[in-house]
Image (cartoon, rainbow, N blue to C red; front, side):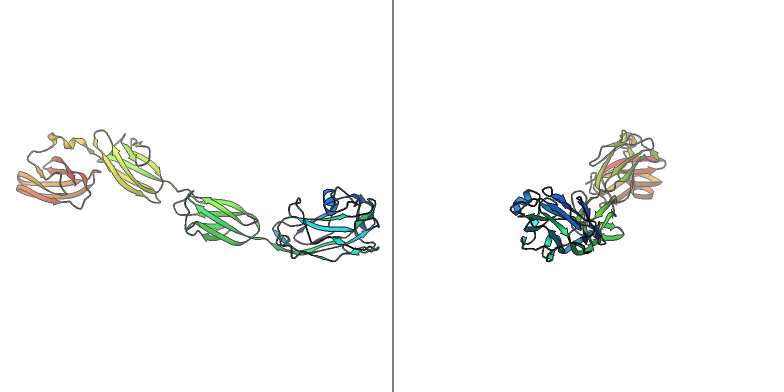
Length: 427
């Protein structure tokens, strides 16, 4: 993965010496010295002196170490298998070595027990490979791993200790292992801001999943990537789009907003628009119709009631409607209040009972050879009943409208150019 070959080094090699071999999918590591030791000159070696502390804790406190690190390229993870190194030393050098590792560069953990009893030759001493496969933190890791080799027990601060060998063109420090492409799980949690939304379609970089009853959709084994595009759609809601970094397992929280729709009220009297009518919709601020008799509410889907009031007209009260996922048009035809005035009635006409259950009788006496039209209108002006009669004598007609909703209706009787109006109550 990374290796350092000290052959050819001469004089004092400064800190930050890069690896001479870097495997594919790896960044180039560096070899350096702790602040407690001093760079020294040694041909074909990365050397230092000042290893004169008495124990490991003193070496750690005194920063007496060689340091090196390995780091995978973006999108890859590493699993380390072993470290092998060769050291050269003079007589008055550290007699004890301890290899440690850190995942944050601050807290270091010992690997195995201290190394003691190693010898020295011109070719240096080849230490047995140190097995790393049992160190779980060094497997499938995606960030930088830092190693420190602490030394202590030198009889003199002047002695030198180094990675290297004399005249041999081989690696003197080698870190072995494997790399693999990072694959992660990306979970989406879709709500309306409070409650989970089932059935939402989540598209992540061209792959689609549908949320379950908990509002969850999971994409497994996603290859490492930056800024993967996603879009979340659900009927009746505004689509949500964005990007997510597939660099580690993560959950993306999505809050979707309902789409509002226009509810257009058109208020008329016959064919004429009614300007200035006040329309009240449950849970909304009232609106007033314009010169065209129109007022528009922008509403979320749901069930509502509305009322319409206008000076000089019979109002409409608490009429229900349901808004689904589309715009809605509501036509309201108001009736002039003058139809209920006595001078607009013919006292010869009798309607009974009134109020009624919707079953009532209309009597028109003294009618000879005339055509009579009888109409029943609801409060919106819609004709719900109509019949034409040819009458010679008394007209007596029982009308059954018990299937209609309870409330106020209007009876309109047309006779030879005259119109008579009555208010009916069904209850």
